Length: 403
Image (cartoon, rainbow, N blue to C red; front, side, top):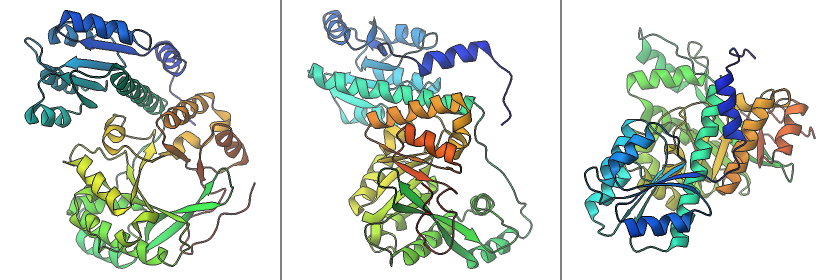
């Protein structure tokens, strides 16, 4: 694996992130001095608290100092808590923000969700409840930093391919020749096949991999056509399987805008309790409005949610805050060669620990060698996937007995 030249500053930052065992750093923004003092005193045991009384002071600190979480009143003089949240997002800072108010309104609640507040708390509040929310926020912040570490390590990439000449006709042929491959996923405890991932394939020779097919669908505005065909064929093939086996199905973020996905009569919806919907973090979710109600509707149908490709793409907190996934799939770029890379080992160790803290199960993708297998078992990954257990195939076959 090609590595970039050593950067002493980056190495120090990496050590600080991966080895941080101190209290999370909390920025408290509250204009009431009595409440500010009470919050500082009550939160000091679990957090390193920096307290200020204005939004302006908070912004000045945020652009110079790294915090794990921000707790801010909405009704601040000058720059309000909503304005502060908006400014945080405009700086593209990933720090989670918890807002509190003594005068809740629909407008402020909507604005808080629009700008990505992690929580919206009404005063007076229980100190135990707000401490729990802040602790979860700090955990999410550490997870985001670990994700950035994966990207800084130079892992992952995405191809672009194809031109527009005859693209529509070629895409139609690819859809007509579409088929579904299934790859086994193994339970690390029982060592038995627990699930399969459905992977789209086509016999159209000019579209040799799913990435090219997706690029064509995006350029033609036909992601709905592709997504519906994949889901229908997947459901048809899988409906005959044992009911205790789970199916992982990939979604493009645009699929979340397709009304058919939420139709209880749709083929995949009919087997929803057996299905985990994988949403890749390579595709940002910013264009999907009402994401929380949409994922709630999917869960009401029986689906579970997984964040795919953790460590390979979009490194924001959005996928965790908004999706609240039951499962997380660690990208194969983190797993391949993990037994030979101390950096990858420590990144995955951090990610698995944080996911356990958030009650999310981990799937290690791309396990190909006994050495990689031993390391991900040691790190406590719940499920395993890769060529060591089986390659994607049209036939739904159990994993090979290799361990």
